Image (cartoon, rainbow, N blue to C red; front, side, top):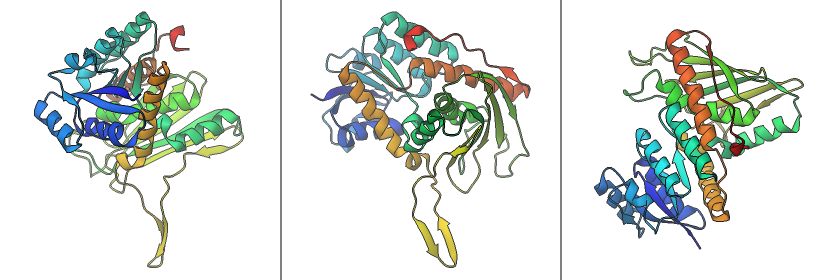
Length: 336
């Protein structure tokens, strides 16, 4: 039997997940959708030619007996409310990042899930499902390069919109590194510093770009992440792990190598969706399979909370340009 899904939020990523769950993935059926703009929700249902009911709001959708599991892809500040409602209803919920817009909100979700007594929440951090990151983690875990000592990372976008502000380099961009690097190293952050190099002339007046985020982990590993969102040339994700006996680097996306016009070249992707489209498929299929098997896995509410705590410290470090302590409470035994 297919898992009956309800989707809250039919914007770009919501629409893409509805398409994915209806046309690409196995054992899932979107039976319910809603959006703050109900006309848009109805249009997505019509455009994708699916037989899903449009509900008046997220709470009506969550409480529908037709809905077995929920996808939250709405506006970020609404996530906390809907995830808490899904937990209260005892329904598994996949929530796109952010889990909540504050660390306090994420903690409420953690506490609610622990009180319920069973994992219900998977957070939409897709990079642990990317083939390249999985291969990199396998090398680290094998001990082939010894213990990781340093990581050199970069997150580059060609451009960003006018509404992109300096703190969004943390909350919208670096947040992915904050999650995936914890997972990669099986370690937590203890301090962070943000430094600002010479500003790019391509950045708008209100935006400080690029930025370098310096992280220290509990085991002593040092991480530098360059965040450069006006690099012009493409969407580029880099991660190099320097170990005691070797170096492991995140593989580049597979591209045709071209010999033409006296040049040897490889194309660089321009869009994050193209870079991680395969990971989105694997991520959501894993959620569907785990719910059908009776146990939600993947990035947890605790992972969402840990990323939010680190992000708050990063924003404080942006403003102070000092080293800031990352104060993460002990992980509940519930999360292993």
